[in-house]
Length: 612
Image 1 (cartoon, helix red, strand yellow):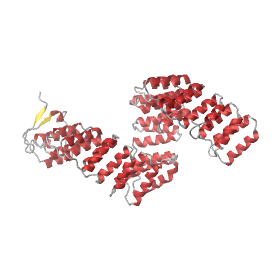
Image 2 (image 1 turned 135 degrees about the vertical axis):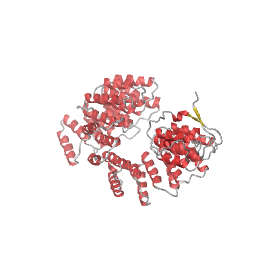
Image 3 (image 1 turned 180 degrees about the horizontal axis):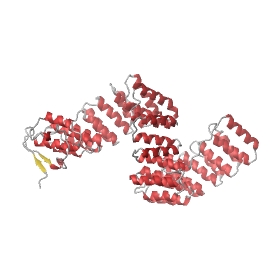
Image 4 (image 1 turned 90 degrees about the horizontal axis):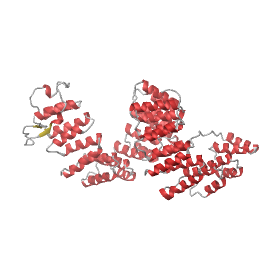
């Protein structure tokens, strides 16, 4: 059976054209079309201008296929202008690029404009790799790119973090004399930043003779993406001084640079400036504001912004739920999630990571299980972020067995997965199980990282396995070429201190190759209280000089004095506490520290009672 349609001789191509019938499959007469569609106009032939008009009104892929069929029967299928229009409309009405690519591949002749259209489609819709493949094919076919080609190609390199290919495209742009085109330069700035090469991005940006809003925004966003927050703020002020008006994308890009208490005032100024420009109603800007204020510990302002929104998308809900969870208000996070479900808003894996973390912070296993059921119903149980959150939640609820069940269900176990499970065992004093799991991890060829060693040293400390802990600490450098950080030295001091080897712990600190911080001394001070060693406790107090910002050390030393019956010293320390108006810092479990070290967005806390 023939699977191709033979078209009449085309006056442009001057030969018969074969198009696969698959282009027009599933097209039937029942599909509603506007009366202006050529299929309602009989068998008359129309000009390309007429078909362009119909294509401009096209709103679905089925309708596009029917118009395309009429174009084919009219003998205009090889018309480059119409083919380019077909691809362009397909890019906008279809989710995938399959149909657009079939139209492109069927064209006997191709100009640079049709190449640009299909490359842009892949750059916009993906897969971006295909944009680069087509760009190479374009060169092989002897077609020279123009200044419209390079922004799409360079952008695809940025999305793929393909720095080497991006540099090749940059060289080609220079070779074709397009390196001073503002759109090419802007795309290069964005690409280099996305690939982490901020220096080259800055070099190109500084060489730009003309900078528009997109150029400034690309460089500002690049600084923020690479954590150059101060540079981003300086550049934003330079942009304002150059009288280039920022848009909502610029403001959304700069706000994360203000997402800490030190830069709160800057964030508030940008908020006010957006109000002055009339951009404060932009939903993406408000969502970013909610996140910024929450990270600056101003959750009430975040909620006020959320409540005043006329329209909320999923990001709005996720931002506010995460704001409560990250600011230790898990009950409000769960309450808002219930409201989200009541209003019929579909959640995603980002929502559930925050909800699971909120459950963990409140401490009820039953609620965590119900959330787990929701995750499975939604088909999100295979998401790595979800599984790590569930593992963490079950561990902190005291159910190491369920945590292990989640761990065992993972199809692919990464170093984060192994470290999380080892940390769960460590937090509950299952030192031997942690050691066995670490051995299993090593046996399966997974290379441990610094977080893994923090977990295993904590496990040794809680289980009193001093020699095993010392062996693993030495093995970090000897076998894995890892340089111990201050957190690993803290674990070792805690390990020796718990075992009553206080003198050895003190000597260990004295020989550290890096400067011990207050946490290292605090670990030894805590051990001094456990073993009632006042002599070393006073030596430690001199070393840390009783940091006036941290009450914990005062409390520890005060308790040591009290247990030794030195009430005058107790009274002296309490007077210092009152004089300096110190507040107790909320405690954190060792597993929370381990999870924080893995990645800042990973969940932490203790699970909740109640219903979802």
